[in-house]
Image (cartoon, rainbow, N blue to C red; front, side, top):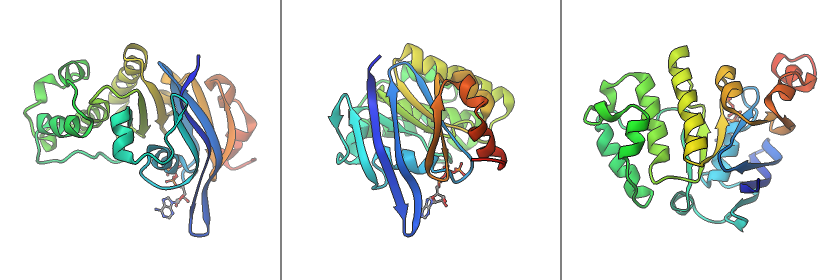
Length: 233
Ligand SMILES: Nc1ncnc2c1ncn2[C@@H]1O[C@H](COP(=O)(O)OP(=O)(O)OP(=O)(O)O)[C@@H](O)[C@H]1O
């Protein structure tokens, strides 16, 4: 399968701090690529750089087209979408209003099928602050999916969810990738979600590439165990 979204030699420095160095990975249609690593490994920074939110070094390709210099808003219209670690919804607006705003920013798109799939149809006219936190995170996912993106960059979508809510989210992610043919990058600390939905993992530690491969191989890699528990790597 050929890569839809390729990130090559991505780097980022904040003053004297090397937050990311030489990170490359590719996303394929219908597949979920997990990006994991301990706190401060550079995972959010990676999404910030490759989504166009933060300047960095390296190259980003969509369909083999170099989009490194394409601004964030234009990347969104080209089908590269992202979510944030903290919910980015507006508490006082209804969910329908927020989806309409997102649809405008994404260059249009129907939201009906999306809200049906995510089980949000019944709460469309509720203000975001009136629905549960789990539903708010699903609204975040819905906002990122408006306009049928081809590439979805998710920053800890399961953060703060209960076990049951995380399972619901994981099921939705599997469906989004498989049925909607989206290439997904998933940054996530919840390993139940990671190992359930990811086809391949890349592990970072202190801004460096540590290992990549199928989840079962990565799980037992001594360098990964060391990075998480501090005994090696
Ligand atoms: N705006 C910034 N200015 C300065 N340093 C930053 C900034 N954003 C991130 N960093 C630093 O860059 C490094 C990588 O941070 P980043 O948030 O990307 O890690 P992360 O892997 O997403 O961590 P977490 O799992 O805790 O969310 C950290 O040392 C962090 O303190």
